[in-house]
Length: 192
Image (cartoon, rainbow, N blue to C red):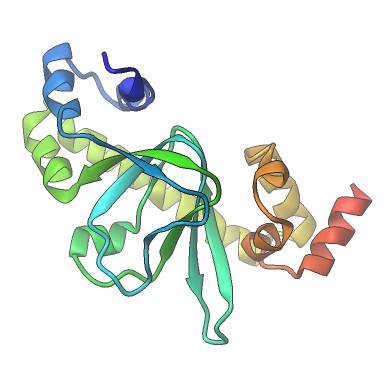
């Protein structure tokens, strides 16, 4: 097996049973892409045509609010997927941008590959459903946290979910993710 595909194979296998034959065919459609730190791989307003599996590195999913400020919605780490699913599946302009926070290697899956996987893989539709459910849960948890948790609780959740995030991402982007000011974040860090 191609070493670059080991992580995605392990993740997919954690969701569904996939035979060696199915994997050989399916993985042959994956493309490896190297992204430089700070490069944008999806721009707000363009149609998202790919799902990215992060092999190595870190992606930031963000949008620009009505005041022209960037708001970080999510950080996608190794062994996770990143995309704007609504734009990807409905083929409409994206509300988000995706940026590499460090040199990053992704495996790229096209819409044809995803749709083909639903038919070609014995458990393809189950895989799609489970991945969509995980994406929904991530969105749900993020929205719920904004309304029900204090900034300190959101900070503690972040540091437990992404233990080394402060070594990998500038503090102002972490503050944006937490929906607080950089000054407030500094106070939380110093109080911890």
